[in-house]
Image (cartoon, rainbow, N blue to C red):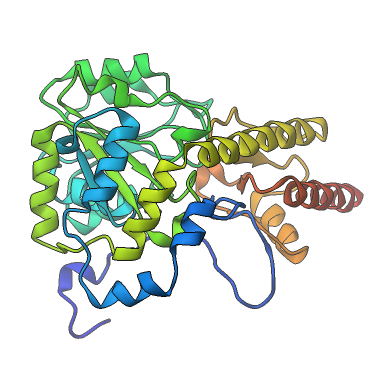
Amino acid sequence: MNRFIDKKYVSLKAYIPGEQPRDKKYIKLNTNESPYPPSPAVLEAVNSNEAAELRLYSDPTSKRLKTAIAEYLGVGEDMVFVSNGSDESLNFLFMAFCEKGAAFADITYGFYKVFAELYGKKMNIIPLKGDFTIDTDKFAESRETLFIANPNAPTGIFLPLAEIEKLLLSNRDRLVVVDEAYIDFGGESAVSLLGKYDNLAVVQTFSKSRQLAGARIGFTVASPEITAGLEKIKYSTNPYNVNRLSELCGTLAMKDRAYFDKTRNMIIKTREKTKKELAARGFEVTQSDANFLFVKCPYCSGRDFYEKLKERGILVRYLGGERAEDYVRVTVGSDGEMDSFIKAADCIKKETQKI
Ligand SMILES: *Cc1c(COP(=O)(O)O)cnc(C)c1O
């Protein structure tokens, strides 16, 4: 019991990030980072001159970055809100856009529940269907602000835009937040719906498909009205939310379309190859449009699979929970990393079949 923290936070269960162990070198397939370095333009720009500029505050409007994002998406700059990771966008959306509470799936990004509890918002947790797809009818019937990770995490399953549109139409006075952390790996972005619907907010990140997880850059695209609301919350909490170096890196990464396309295509190719190899060995894998696979080991429990991989120097994420206890989430790394993962899976298969 903490003597000084406000009572209402004593029982708060915080988000637990994936392990970042330092005890030995692992093949890290547990936090959906990119196996590739940032764009060469980014590597070149981060130099001692830029570091010297750190004595100055960052641009509170993140103007260059905002312009680059708006140009890339073909939307107005007044529709782009730049944040410190997409987690900060989500933080503000839970804080200030959930008057009637928040509805989200039982198996989805774990932070939604943490934010809802942090802000004391009413929660409506809607179970995924048996095949791990989103129950759009139940979502449509609900009254709360909707949070849909699309593709969903940790399943990787993409919900077609026609379904998102049904949710937008189900109540045009209710906000629908689509968290597109993994959209660049195969799905279709809901940004194209923003011209038609002003009750939509699309959240994206530079962490998964632009090699900048450590720079902490995310953004929300929404109507100018929603964007202005998010700006208001930002200026009431942390006006310089994106640091100078990150803003520079994000701008350059956004402008390097060729590198972005090359790396995301490599990951998609590796994902499909890994999926086939797993299926050939009897592992069950969901249809993923993300940079990870949700894998069920037929030979041992999810926790055992996680632990046996870790013993072999491979880190994956075991999330547990009643419906996902047989599964682990495996980030798609480089071809070489995935070869090591498949080899380890083969050994585990042999070992567990003997017992
Ligand atoms: C990784 C992830 C985020 C957070 O990303 P950051 O931009 O690094 O804060 C948000 N939503 C989902 C579904 C994610 O998987």
